[in-house]
Length: 199
Image 1 (tube, rainbow, N blue to C red):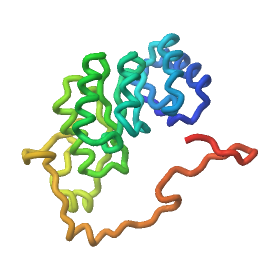
Image 2 (image 1 turned 120 degrees about the vertical axis):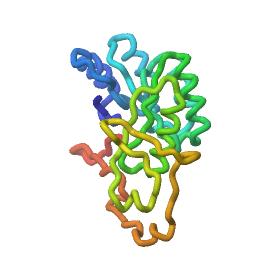
Image 3 (image 1 turned 60 degrees about the horizontal axis):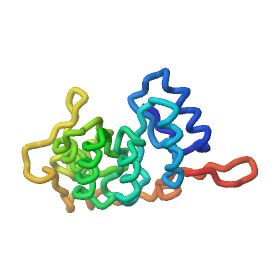
Image 4 (image 1 turned 45 degrees about the vertical axis):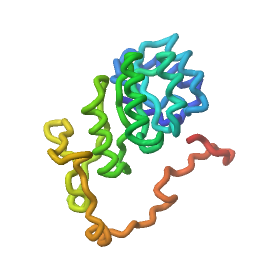
């Protein structure tokens, strides 16, 4: 796996996808920003490097052309950004028809509820591929009883109904939100002339 985070110019992304083909990556992630989706056609025509895309999509309509045209190999959307479990399930079903596997976005800032939702989708999709997951600390596990557990490299659900997770709101009050620099966002990357660089 390698995540580009849309940080290189599109034409360089096309070159890079060809260059890493010899390393047989599981997938190359977020090669382009959503507004540069047209470049995926160039990548698909020039390399067999598997491509994952979607964590910046905010609507199911953004990924449908990518699936229909078979431009990606892994669905990498953040399910809360595209409307939740129901739209994600429909997208996964469309991916299954097109031979595209799931790899739901699950970084460290995804809540235990989000990870439980990802796991529910993983268990219900025939085209499951891989799942990103963050290990939770003891405080988080106490506030969110029923967190999915990771054992021997695999995420396991519990035997409770639904997503199997709860929120202890009283206990959560003991852990107030701490303000982070830039609101927790990535730093702005600037060129020597001061202009901003994506993302």
